Image 1 (cartoon, one colour):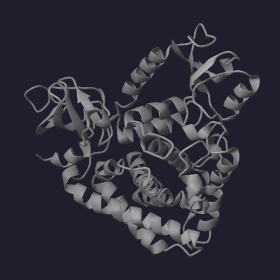
Image 2 (cartoon, helix red, strand yellow):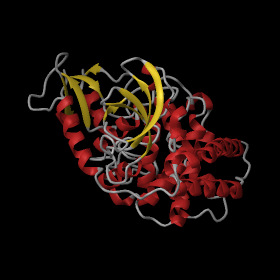
Image 3 (tube, helix red, strand yellow):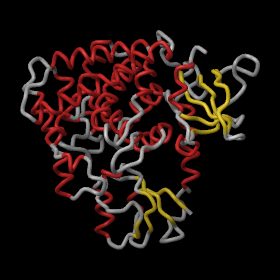
Length: 408
């Protein structure tokens, strides 16, 4: 049986099934292994890993530890309570913003690529172009946050480095606005999001795109990028404290396990804490050379578990309300057996969004697309409910093709 235990309960002879953390943050070559020494346990604790999944069929047990299924059920109940608060209403329909967001996604990715190239060559940042791009992203988020953030969930391992920065920018703007912050602050946070990985321009591509485990020396080089980026941006006139702080501290963790300064608790600025949450969320959901992206719903659940130690629980819960348990672009399976893509959150019930239905799992075939508001009853445009999220690869479908049917 798989059980979830605290790292303080680990003993030599237990079989680790999952370290419950991002693959890049632990010092082991594998995620699954038998604990053979106290030194291995010490490494787990020092890496800031608190929750570990063990397999008691392959090693020692912890009698009173909950099973993974029990722990997941407890979390699910807590999440349902968290997402009950109403959210701001968007200004225009997703379908009306999608074309502009598509163009903006392409332009912004190109700009980040240019910024990285300029930094590598020692050239000054074209900050006015960057500011103009962040202004356009902010305006798009204000019109409909789901359009751009939904599109930005589509990344390949080849364009991850560039689109990740654009995604963090857009999500930071949306996060700030959902928390009631003014537009000027949201813009500055978005600027920090777009520039937060500037220091990675100084990391060799062979390390950034390495498909296997990094050596300790390579990981130390990666960990320099927040300070390198901060040093580079200090040379940019009138950038302001918010982008600088986000760039320097987006890898800090509240338990002190982060870098570069090992800050603890509220010594980390609020916007830097928000950026840390957004950065991890987008990384978890993206395809990378060494990591397969996971569904947004699963990423949110991981963030919620990790918020006990690494992140502010309040901020993580606010972020969950911002993007919804089923963010725009999520492929879901309905009780009727149909597949649908989420196109809009329901402000009063984030568990019952508006979706576009397009595929039948019973007949394994596409069906006539239909917009369904899951918050409504049968006969009123609803009458169905989500039973879980699905993998597009499993069904060989492209849910993003059906985002534009919001007004159909």
